[in-house]
Image 1 (tube, rainbow, N blue to C red):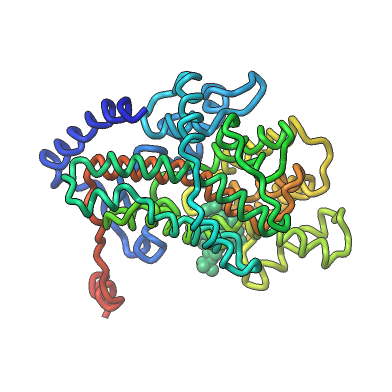
Image 2 (image 1 turned 45 degrees about the horizontal axis):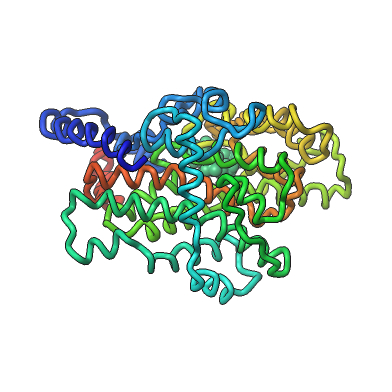
Length: 432
Ligand code: FCX
């Protein structure tokens, strides 16, 4: 896979250089003050090949939509979900892999999955009441002791080889994540009764196994989960933070840990916990596990009146229902019969968009990925919702780290946009 990646991607490096040299002065966009004041939305300023987000049709990984991936990527069983290993291959190399490519990648990760003892010691030194994302990011950071890129850099390796050791770090890091995530899960919720990895299992299947969830159904769900959360182009907080920190040539462990700290925020990956917290608070307050549509509408309106967001709804780029939401909804329709929590999530899908539309300010009233994911995990017995963002983080490694290898191959420079005092923007607007 490394050779195949290099053969394909090195052609793009020449294209990158040619574009820069021949068309570097071409103007591609104007920037408005509103864009500056709304988080740089719509300003083209990053190069990310792994995926692209369309506001209406949603995410495409190297051009493929989620339904296309569910059809085309190799699976273990004909009626199963695609293996996330295949998506990583696609994002890195740009081609749909053969089944053998995917199985080989699975084996490669299994052989790289050894986690050094000091990483477990670091986790064990953190109080058990610390958030799982605190433990997860500390564990990742502590693995930087193993960075091959960092050692190579210090020995003075030529910059054209940076991608090679970055690739090795990235592969080791991804391979180890299920073990680390499962260790945190079992430590926090199962009294430190840990389960050893099974090297015969695939990457997502092994995560389910080490978490103690052995059914084929959960493994199938986790494969889907790991595919749909893997990447969302380059400007979202976790991807951008990983890229930004990586652009200083910080090692991949540092870069990915930075991404995870961004993912932990409530407007990003923590929203998958918030959705379940919010629903459970509603049920507790209403003293029922079967609220009426009217009760749900009233609770949603009150959330807005209190100046809070309705978690799982809205998006910075999307202007339609998130296809990652739809993929999970279809999964539930196919495999889940009448689950109370999932029924509430489906009711919310009906009633929340008009409420958000009524505010007149929410640009996208439709559900995002986080609106569904928790209810499905809960249904299959992964009920510990404070852990959900860690699962999102394990998946997100696939996209942001594939991109990091490419950043290093292209030789992307340190990122350094300009900032000005507020007064300067007033002056630009001719506003005295
Ligand atoms: N509930 C209430 N208000 C919302 C809202 C929601 N779900 N979504 C947006 N708004 C509000 C914003 O807070 C903002 O209000 P303000 O003008 O008073 O500050 C206004 O609507 C305009 O925001 P908008 O441009 O539509 O959205 P942004 O790009 O600023 O923010 C997020 C996008 C996703 C952060 C926003 O929709 C939100 O907070 N949603 C709830 C949290 C969530 O689900 N996050 C997960 C997103 C994603 F899928 C992921 O990264 O995992």
